[in-house]
Image (cartoon, rainbow, N blue to C red; front, top):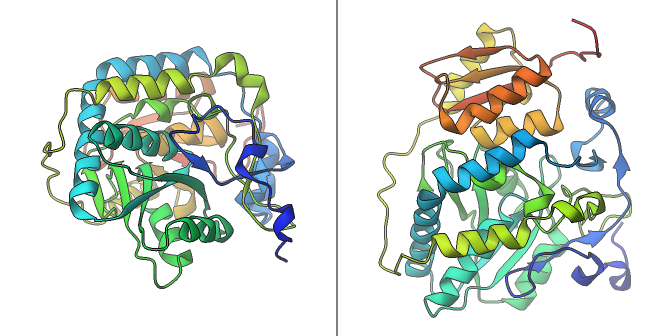
Length: 357
């Protein structure tokens, strides 16, 4: 059922901390079905949609915060170059581009690209909306963006790709007259139309969640339909790094000009097949339980019940936080030199109860 227009709550309803000049947020406030990680795993195995459940975020741990800070220092210059190269490519390719970032991992990227384009003298509209695996893109929000930009060329922005699930969700849910133009900073899956690199790397905001994205929770859907929803993670207000992170990205892109371009290298060819083959040797044959890439592996340790961590090499700087998280969770780690990603996390095939095997 589609709600009446007056029930489609406006972006201002959410007291997020994203600057209004950087993004128009197409999400409404709603009360989600809050569950613990273990309850979520039980419900998912019973067939409940992931997009209807939400686990409240805890205060970022020392491991997460240290990983975020270290990635800003270690990978910061490269992230600035990736942002500049991607933004320059979009501006050079399209006459009327409109950024539509996918909340949440794409949101800081879209904000940074908008700021950079503005510095280069171009107005690059930026909207952020929800896409949920299994539910697809938020059609109500997408219609609102199209009404604002009837001649705009929509570019869907994300931070990174894992196995390409979001790309598949776009393909499966976008109207036939909207091309699947996915643009990402890191595309180890090889599915994005526009990729700044195909390397797997730790983007700083992959180590955190709401605290670098305006305090927005992961998005979800509710029974009444309409705009996808989010809640404000109020418990994190004292730990909000959103403004700091966007300022840092702004500074990191300062050295670059509109003519800047990074060589991307060859597109990976079905790298996920090799990951699933390696996972099968560890007894995990359900593809839904295999999450490749540093970003997706980190998400597993923060949101799901991990069973195993696969690494391409030991002690890589971009996966040290994963090793620390695995050690804290007593999750085994194995090294696979042929892994096409830096990391992949395997989700428990059966529920693991505290104190159990």
